[in-house]
Amino acid sequence: ISYDVQFRRMARLRNGKTGFEDARTGWLRIRPGVVEVTDPSNKILATVPGAQIKELSKILTANSNLITVTGERRQFVFEPGSGKQEEADLVIKLVQTHVMKRAN
Image (cartoon, rainbow, N blue to C red; front, side, top):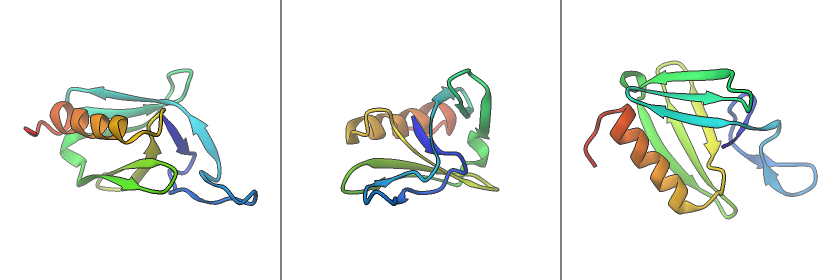
């Protein structure tokens, strides 16, 4: 996934393109009852238990498909690796099924 260090939404950058201000690349781990964001060295940056997820949504922009996971304390915004809508839909479905334990 791609994300901003502070998990901010994408913004217009100085070069005129839209992107994360302080972009990083990492992994999204979807496990039973929990979703984790890790850096490339597998250091856990954020953990959100399924019971604490208040909202899971997709934000469509002209250039990308962002996913937001809103927990009790904070909101996490990231973009799937390919940036394609199909991948964003799959991530949402996996989080709903395996982390939030919701039937689709």
